[in-house]
Length: 171
Image (cartoon, rainbow, N blue to C red):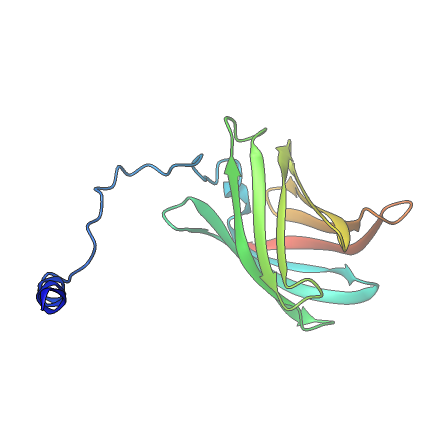
């Protein structure tokens, strides 16, 4: 009988669990897009991917209250590649802080997580896993020209398997 009374009391008191008030601060270093805002906009690129001529569109836009830069890449010719993900910085200075990239794609590696840093006009990102060691280089050569390279670091010498030049279409 006590069990039934206890069960009824629990059912009558059921509701969402209590939630602590938000402090507005994350328990980890805040993500930001400092030093990445020059990438915002739409881009069109041409180059090669695994030796095949390709053309792609690439878009960067602020996301989640400006804490992240969301990107989307779509094949326009040469292959059927599609990718999307996020780019963000953590660290004290926009030009020297840590940069991270999370990518989800239709490519050979559907999920990639790379970390690196911004050095001047270049963003250098690397991923080291049992099946691959790669480097992505994003270089903003000027306000309207972006170079993307993906390099196989295991090859001797390292080989760029993606090499593409993008021109800004809009801001």
